[in-house]
Image (cartoon, rainbow, N blue to C red):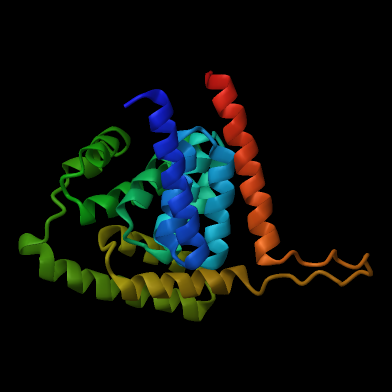
Length: 252
C-alpha cells in the first residue's frame, strides 16, 4: 500500500470514529480508541484533551482514566500521572495496568513504600507478573523471599487479623487515629484483597482529613457563557486538524 493510500485509510478510520463519537458521546471505548489514533500521529496534547473530555462524559471509565495517567507519564508529568493513577485505582482498585504504573511512578517520585504496596497488590492478582517480582526483589528483598501463600499459617493469619483490627479500633476509641490507620495499612499489605479492611481504612483517612475547607465567596466578574457541546467539539476538532496538518508537513 502506498504512503498516500495509508494516509487516506488512516483518515477514513479517524472519520468513522468521529461519526461514532457523535452518534454516542457517552461511549468510553470510542473516546479511548480515537485518542489512541491521535497518539499514532504524535498529537499527544490533543489525545490528552480528548481523554479528559471523555472522562467528563464517562467519569467512571477505567480505560480512559488509565489512558490519562499513561499519557501524562509519557509526557514527563510524573506528579500529574501519579494523581491520575490514584483516581483510576479509586474507580478500579484491582486494575493491574494501573497498579504497575503506580509502582513505577512511585519509584520515580521516591515513594518507595507506596511503590512496594502497589507491586504487592499486583502480585496478589497476577502472581507471575515478572516486572513486579523484579521490583520487589530489588526494593524489598526480604519481602520477596517470604512465602506469602496461605498454607498452614492461613488460620493463624486470620486470627491475627481479627486481633490486630481490634487493637486498631481501641486506638480509634482513644483518639489515636493515625495509629489506627497505620495498623489497617499493615493489615492491607498482608491481605490486599480484604474489602472490609480497605473500607475501614478509607473511613479513618477521611475522618483524619476532616471536611474540605470552604473559601469565602468573593465578588467576581460574571463567568463567560458556557459553550454548547457542539461548540466545544468544534474547537477540539479544529485544534486536531491544525496539529495533524503541522505533523504531516513536518513529515513531508
